[in-house]
Amino acid sequence: MNRLAPKTDTLKPLFAKSGNQCAFPKCQHPLFNHKGQFIAQVCHIEGASEGGERYNPNTDDEYRRSYDNLLILCYAHHVETDDVKEFPVEKLRQMKKEHESKFESLNFHVEKEDLQKIVDEMNQYWDDIERLNKVDHKFFGTELEMEIDVKKNFLALVDDIKEEVDAIENLLKIFADSDQNLLNDLEQLLKKKNIDISIFDDVPYYENSFFNRNWEEHNLGSHNWIKRLRIDLLHLEIKYLELQLILNNDEIFKDRLIKAKNIFQEYAQKAIHID
Image (cartoon, rainbow, N blue to C red; front, side, top):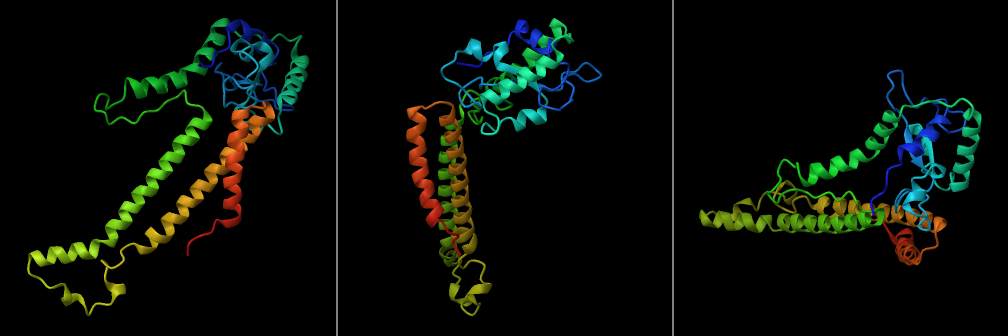
């Protein structure tokens, strides 16, 4: 299910108690600049959708977009509070409570039209991306378009990247095999012109650009970078799964985390640079 945008009736009291300031302690970053432009972000305490920070599968979409689950932060502190270990649900709820208690009597006013604009902008970006990719792509209908699925969750994207790493590794192997056969290909080409390749025998191998072409890149560089990419991707996956298990004890996350950790232990003990 797609995430639901907050209702304007929900945003009205949220902004009214904001004091036109970021809710992060001691931050005075305004929510609207002198031109009346919204320059902050409406943030969810418990993630709006699966894969979001502090996502709670035991709540419904209406709660996730409710007043109790929202607070307003500047861009910098929105990013900072993505650290769910440092900023769990209760800490953000307390932050919201303390901030709103300071400005409750001030009743900062935002026009309903402006609130609706904020709601629309929150959803518009991904809608635009989907439209650009599915409808307005410059090469639409050619079957050359690269698809972007904006509805994929974090773990689905991780699985896609793993497949893409496999494909890149296979492509590099094709390049390596091609370069390895380059000298034989040259010999066959010269034979068609009745040229004996032995005329190059007096050229040292290290001066022969057709001998073991790009050997280090194929046998050292590409292997090391692919391995590094697999390690970092698995590292990222484990940290994500750990955070999910803090929020909810889901067996799917647990099983996947066990498998990922076992592989990562192997990497931690045995992964080396080929040199």
